Length: 135
Image (cartoon, rainbow, N blue to C red; front, top):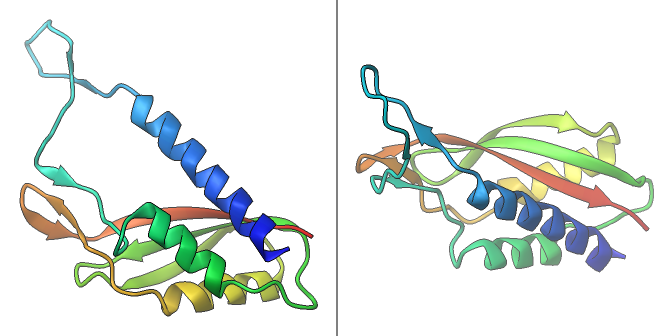
């Protein structure tokens, strides 16, 4: 059961990452009629220790489906802070109190992430995580 929940969460995030990677961002410069793809090598996304696969493994090992949990899609948004800790948890979708408590509990116990950088400056970022609780 737990494996299905996390499999679907991983699948959802991987699909988001796949479509996000293919998205073209266009850089617009006032007075310049040329269209150029935006590519800022000075930006680094935050990273869980060991990468995305390690993050999904961490979730799989630690999230438990308990009696009282219901089937639902939950989306939690959180901040990856400058020190790599997680905070400012907000539920964007989902209503079951037990599901919400379980996801936030596991995220609070998460090891510190490698923080995001913009132009070599460490910065806080928002991260959204979809998780599907299902039997």
